[in-house]
Length: 171
Image (cartoon, rainbow, N blue to C red):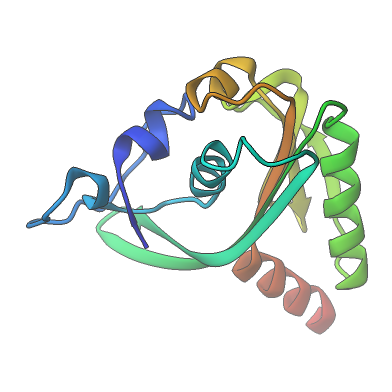
């Protein structure tokens, strides 16, 4: 899926850690390959502010990462929940339920991510490998998208979830 650096990084308050840029593009809006899904969900949410809350949306799809000189496609799952009482616990419970239903052993540890409120963000770890993150979105990010209610969110690498689950089962 194509996107742009403003949406993927500037609005989300994060640094570009290796985007794949399209050599010849027709619109700046579609000038790079997306590296994560959450910005796309926030963009969608910003275009649906006129609908009643709560609004809960998820997407499963490819994120393309540049790792050294290689290009890696990973299947990701991301979800957001927007309403006046959205909080860290809601995102944590969604991830816990999903991974428990998949039979994945995991733990959740505090994590710093500039898109999230400090102290209200966590990484999801499976077999000592980070497979995702979750938490409450930082007010500056909400402001960047013109959102007026709290939002909690998560993003997981489904490829890593499956890989770690399979390795745990074969160990």
